[in-house]
Structure formats: C-alpha cells, structure tokens
Length: 274
Image (cartoon, rainbow, N blue to C red; front, side, top):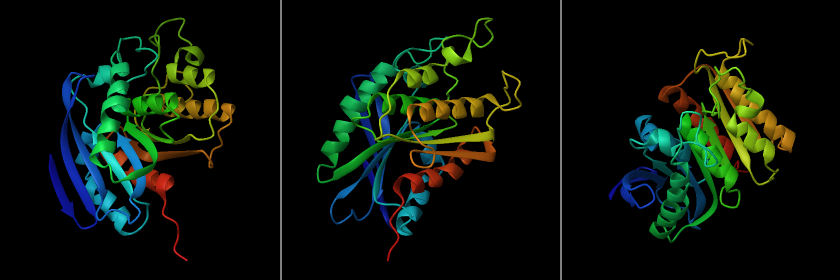
C-alpha cells in the first residue's frame, strides 16, 4: 500500500487480491485531507481506474474539494485487467460475441470483496451514499451493477457508454434495436425506483456509425434511447437524470476529463455558503 498526501487530498494505491476474479487488482483511492469533522462522506467507484489516473484525477479532484465546489467524497479507481472485455458487461447475458462472460464474477468482486475492503480500511468513516461510474464498456458495467442493486447504489455516471450491447449482430437481417439491445430491454422490463439518479455523457465524435441512417451516430442514439426508457418508467430529466453532449467529444480520456467535473458537481455539489 502506498499513500501520498498533498494539499487538500490523500491518494492511496492498493494491490487487492481477488478470489472472484483470480487476479490482483490495482486500486487508487482518492479522499479529502483532512477528513470532514463528522467523518461522513459519499463513496464513488470508477471502472477503468487507470483512465482517471491518466487524466490527472488527483489534481482535478483536489481543486474541486479546495474550492468547495463539491462535498467531501471518497473516490476509488478500479484498474481493469487483461480480461476487461469479459469482466465488463451485463450480468444477465454476454453480448452476441460472448463479451461480458465474467460480468457476474466482476459484480461479486465489487460487492463481496472491494466494498467490504473499503469499509474495513476506512472503518472510522460513515458513507452516506454509494455511486458507480465508468467509461465506454466500464460505463455499461457500472450502469448494470447500479440498476441491479438500488439497495446499495444511488447514482451512476455513464461516459460514452457501450449502450449498444446487444444479443445479435446488427448486420443480421432480423436484428431489431427495440428488442436486441440488452440494456434497453432490461430497463423496459424493470421497475421505477425513485432512489436512483443517472448521469449520461456522449460525444458527437465518439464514433461514425449510423446504423439507422438518421444522421445521428449510434452512441448518441443508444444513450438517448436508454434515457427514453427511463423516462417511460417515471424518472424525470433534470430531477433524476442529466445528459451532457460534447460537440467536440471523442471516445477518449481527454473528452471524459472535460465531462468528469460536470458529473461530480451534478452529484455532489456543495451547498452555497450564506
């Protein structure tokens, strides 16, 4: 375990062995220094923790805390490994290429190994909520885990999410985006839960594919269609959902770094001082 403390922020790096995944996972933990007086703060997990490390999350996070733009928060970046395409996905089913086959084991790691480790490591803290976020496939994974565990999580951040996740190749003649996109189907078959809140980001340069020829790239279509499914269930945009579309946004770390402070302020904005 390696710990660094700079002005306003603490960063710990941990190597956490996992029985569920049969590998050791690198974890970066970012927190306020000093801790809040009442030892109460939010907990936010990130898939693809190596990406937030690469974007200089420590400086971004430290600035937001120092300027009191956000409430105190403990952030945990979970590095992905060689099996990323198998571990990230949906618990209910792999996609048509068999990707996501270890999503169940990954959920088990999160809920039965990582979260208990955090609670034990920071047993002096009280977490008043737990959230999960991720990029691309990591965003799909975060959304799937949050959706299936509203008793544990209350917010999710999905950046350029792989919401195309489907049971059939879109090139198959009988492909039907209304029924073959698995996340959309899962939400449609699920129930409204007023506790959950959603943040979605998409970039207009995320990709070039436009399967239905409507002059909107698929990643934006897929994201907006997920939001439509949520709206149909009872969630409200503004109150329960936030959508950020970046005109110059690409499928890359630089674009997600632009969106991340917006997400953090949306989810944990500090109250204005009187």
